[in-house]
Amino acid sequence: MNAPDNKLKKVAYYPGCALEGTGHAYNRSTKALGSALGLELEEVKNWNCCGAMEVKNIDPKIQTYLSSRVLNIAANEMKHDVVMAPCNGCYHNLKKAEYDLAHDQGSRDVVAKLSGKAGHQTYEPGKIETIHALDWIKRAVGEEGLKQRVAKSLSGLKVANYYGCMYTRPRHIFPEKDQGAGSESTSKPHFMDDLLAAAGAENVDFALKTACCGGAHTLSDSDTSTKLVVNIIRAAEAAGADVIATECPTCHSGLEMHQIRAEKNFGVKTKAKVVYFTQLLGLALGLSARKVGLHENVSDSLGFLKARGLG
Amino acid sequence: MPIHEKSLIRPENIKSHEHKVVDGIDVSGHWSTFIESRVVTDYNEELQDEIAALPGGENIHRCWQCGSCTNACTVNAINPDFNPRFWIYLIRMGMESELLRDKDIIWQCVSCNKCTYACPRDVAPEGVMKATAHWLELKGHTKPSPSTAFDEVFSHQVIETGKIEEGRVIRGFFARTAQPLNQPWLVEMVKRMVRHLPIGLLTRMGLSALVAPRTSDWSRARDAIKEYVAEQEAHHRAALSLDAPRAAAE
Image (tube, rainbow over all chains, first blue to last red):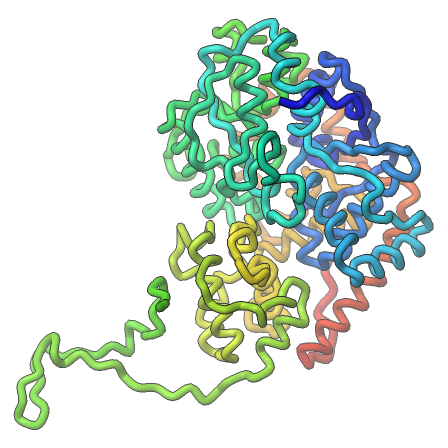
């Protein structure tokens, strides 16, 4: 296990659009968890949307530009070495922009042209490191550090860790993954499992960690998304999970929304609670349910977690 | 190695007869199964180049038909007709009319990137699916899909203001696709969403629905992006030998 990385005591924070809307509980719990752990987050000033899943379908290079503008502010205007994005979509797009700018002249040209016209500095690849909220806690605090701070163990809580698509795919934009011991795996990610286990949770053997929830078509092809989500929730329940831990606002709200849609439109009822990993870790550190935004989740886990002495 | 996940023989072209005698020999039942012969003459030799000219399609020429994409595909698992390997094959062969048989499902790619993860040749099949869906719409073979409507509503907001507000995107998408907002599951979700919410947060959400969040000092970026989008659209239409611009997105 690596020693805590002091470089991560203060990082730039890119919440993204979802964390100001349906993912607000993730925003709240990420900030609460950071301050409980003595980690400082400085929000990227006047940020813009990274392009999400949609802008690339209009043109992929606009997405690269949008993400590069965020990287430029964090790196060149705010002088940060690290930017942390809790949303898988944001994290993925910043990583992809970094990769494309380092490897593709066409992307560099478009970003330089658009940055010039927009009146700001062009982001040069390699200026800043993009990390996910999982990397942040794992590297800044680590399992040992977490264990020492646990006030209310998650013991007895059966959790399926769900990572979704954008955290690990495609492989080439995550050069630091699959690098042996201590690094994250793209085929079987485990950072969330590691952190929740350190907080006492019992992680179930869940085969659909990186399955797709159909988030990109959650409204445009809802029946497909509902089928995919029902598969995921049923697999988690079959593995014995009471709770599905998430680390992406789109996955999280997709699971919540299609759990309801499956019930209303198809009469398919499932029970698993959907909770952000930052909420679970916050509860383990002794933070209140309100402090980690449990009441903001659509999936109601308040009573269930309270009955276990959490929150 | 042969790939067995998709037969090139259409079911309607398989003919068998319960009672059939050919040249005095009884070939009834199983013995009389024949495949109706057909000759493909309407190749579109430009098809691969046209797909490769659209964003995402650039690497299609690298495919060697291993089938890893289809094997990994999320959508194929729930609909066997959704078959990226087969479509890439048809495009590379120039078999446009065969491709058009599946024109109404190609847009359903969920962009999970499992194919791109599995592909040993860096074809980026997810991109090829998007390019193909885009091609079908540009050529007028299909109407803009619900996915395109969503992408356009979403991107329009990003380009105009720098940010999105989810409520606005959802309302815009439902209006664009003429769906009512009062769907039982959506009503139930909103009910559950506000159940425990404190007044402060509700007010904040209400405000952001009225006054869209925006990135300040955004107008120059907005104009630069719009200009670039228009340029690219012209390039794409030229690559597909199309003239008049498509009706502007709302």
